[in-house]
Length: 218
Ligand code: C5P
Image 1 (tube, protein in one colour):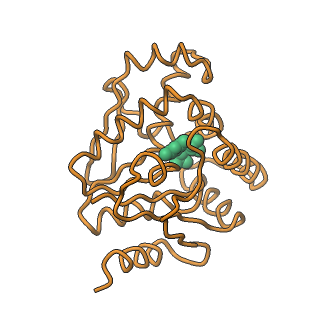
Image 2 (tube, helix red, strand yellow):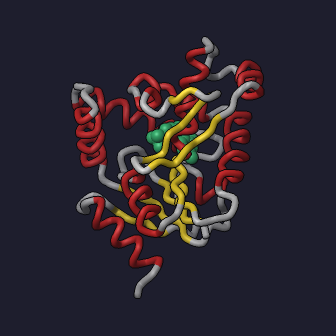
Image 3 (cartoon, protein in one colour):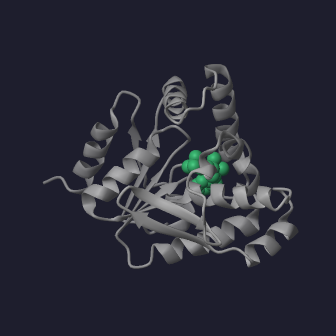
């Protein structure tokens, strides 16, 4: 069984998807981390994020792997642990560029499906329910008001020791969302059968409870 949770940045997807996976004893697939990891690698290699030929060459020498540990998932690019560096604001600001490149999306989709083989996975991202796992048993689309998403993003960055102003967070979030929604290939949108969950007024635990209740009402 595959459960997909899609939604815009700051909608609470990551926390909720991890908790749902934990409660069900499923694996957790953070597809955003994969786009971030490739962005990090392309920047390291000095490759322009829209240069699809250079990216194709880069992908041919890239091994992207994940390891589930007790304290969460760790991501590795050619054996190097990139779990922390891929969360940098610098990556958030440019990750849409690489996410719009077809060869990158197709390469990651294949990897995402391979990781999910055998089922029992909670897959989180932008196109999990629409494109990657169209036959998923349960599909959720998480939303939250814009001010609340900005507030969450700010709290998250502050907790990581990054002090960024509200205005610049709001600007960056708006821009990233607009680009994810407007992208020609696999834009952010709910799958036709997706259940919309508005988490604006909900604590993560409440959102998780609502999802678990829908999956298993007894
Ligand atoms: O989920 P997260 O905010 O870490 O995702 C980072 C970026 O990766 C998104 O803004 C989007 O451009 C891209 N992404 C995507 N498709 C996914 C997951 C993430 O295009 N399934």
